Length: 100
Image 1 (cartoon, helix red, strand yellow):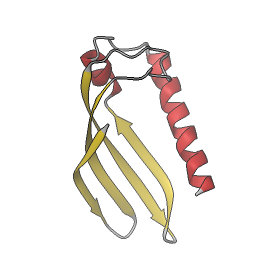
Image 2 (cartoon, one colour):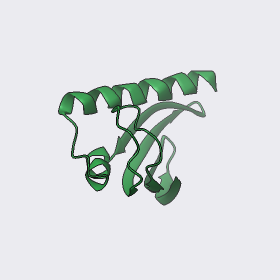
Image 3 (cartoon, rainbow, N blue to C red):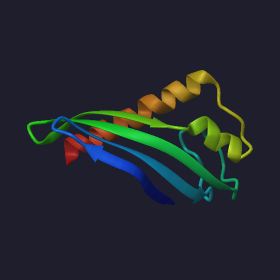
């Protein structure tokens, strides 16, 4: 998996960036319970971090999962699964932040 920072900028309260990920699906997509396809994929996303007292206080995250699944010939998942995977992703991020 390779990530490229397309654009990154910051001000006194925020750090934000847009990225592009390219990879080959060689492992299962655990959040969706889907086995590997072996297909290449490109996906875009972005992060916005709010900084408070020199620490990351909030994060807004977005990634184009429906486009990735379409490239893998898997079609978009039902909205409930997308919502659950976004919730799980945010939960894991918060857990990592507390451990850092």
